[in-house]
Length: 107
Length: 117
Image 1 (cartoon, rainbow over the protein chains, first blue to last red):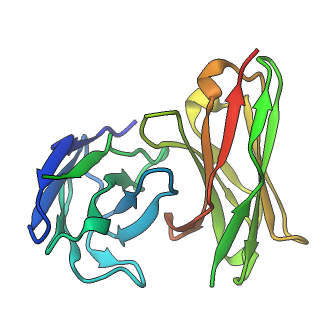
Image 2: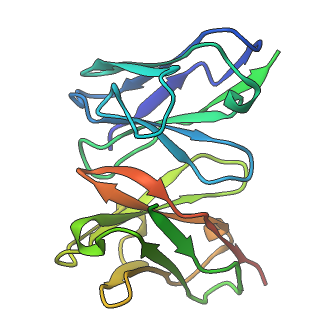
């Protein structure tokens, strides 16, 4: 199985900050990477697919980049509702594996 | 807008089975697949499997192979996930998600399954 490793595992930031989360795949997955946001007690919400394409309705403060094995999710101008857990997922090869998650907390 | 509404919480005894439903609305069901993902308490997301609503093709996570069955009923736009021989390790929230071009765009609200004697 392809291993997905996110860093950091947790991150403290302030409202208005810009943060970057990294996701590394154990093998080349081209651009077949998605990012999800999960707020406490809620279902995951899709943010980005194909490494850098924004899902409909997702604000442009979210952006993704990368290809091959290294990917990033950047969130600009953090607002209170952005503090959540973020997951990356590869969908290049079955089983479609997730990263362990990055918890974004308010400083 | 696209909605996936899942069945309610379940409490099961070890060794039993559970069947969770996921009813889709406001899109052409057979044009998309359905993925199932679960999340144990306090843990991350685990991909369980996928089914094509067009032809019923499936792909299952190896660790669940033989214990999980995904089905769909195109007449009611409903997908089902059945998990057999439950143990306490299967206690989790189970999510369905619409799949297009292999990624998941819309998600159900989740179904809590508790396995306890």
